Image (cartoon, rainbow, N blue to C red; front, top):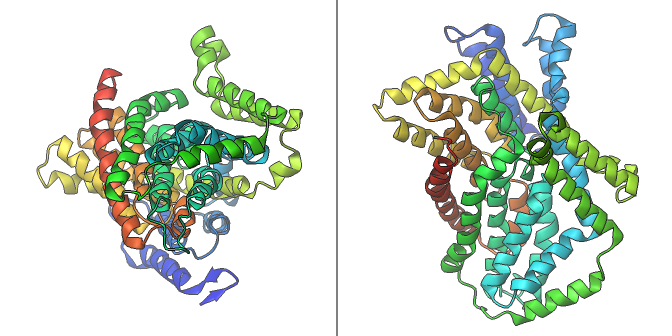
Length: 488
């Protein structure tokens, strides 16, 4: 039953799980009751997100209210509400929210579409070339588009559909096999790869940064530049392989696509010469990338270091001053404000689960269980990695999955002997690779799946194969690259 967007049965399941943990399951030895009660609230919240009981922002507000009212972090009311709202003071949350506001300019100015059509005009004479054009467009947009759904579903998917339709390849005509199925799958599977390559390419990545820092006592703090450099080579190899793998798996009937080149040229002509607003946006993106990559600090010294969130704020300010974006448009960017709210709640709960010792208890339990198998650290950490990645079949939110599992699994891997930096990077990559798996894996997947170009079986088969290919690339190419960089 559904009442104004509130789903009764999933809500009852979520509440039931929370009550069972709170009242029925005995508090384990060495765990404080308050910590156990916070875990109950956390599990209930994650279950509600998975069950889509309400919009995730609404669930976040309920979680914040419960943490404050039930005093699971402190028995002092003033401290409890301060703890419940503490997530809003996390600069990484504002980095993502403000970056989403900035990326709105890609759609408003038409720069995102221009980039996509430019790549198709350049590579679009063959179907495989269109695949690479879609992938490279994703790659160019990824560093400044933290909403992977907006990037893939909002910018690239309409371009992909227009190309498919120009070749009379539509589900309605039962001609999706001509070119549409292949392009839809390439459109989608470029998204998890590019999401893994930059901290600012998908909203949950800063959460990974925070969880890694907490698990290592801040000994490992992944900067924007460190992340981008570490993911560069495996990401490029994965981008190179993905269109080829999908062409073998679901070969398009049309391979010669000179018409796509002409179509893209026509679209570029419609867009006209590059506008002043697009030039300003390009300049702001260049400014942001320089600051995020730490170029001023590298060139001029630590005195000129700029915090990534401060850089994002400066970028938004420049777009407001120049009129590329208006304040009303910023206020209307619901996705950004929604992300800030639910991200703040989940980060707050994850932070206090760590502070109160629940993450340490869970990681120790995992460590003890795996040690009993007598595995070396390589096989033990691989087992943790695979369990973490393929658990995403049970999740409809990458953020919920990362919040629920990353901290404990990462800490367990380190305790079992995995090199902290390398294990952090492969777990970070897996946090995006898992988007490949299902038609509900992330916000982008239902958009492209519901366009009708693939069957459910085709989507899941492509997802499984691409997850294995991407994982192999990051383990082999990434492992060698990280060794070269001196990470192990």
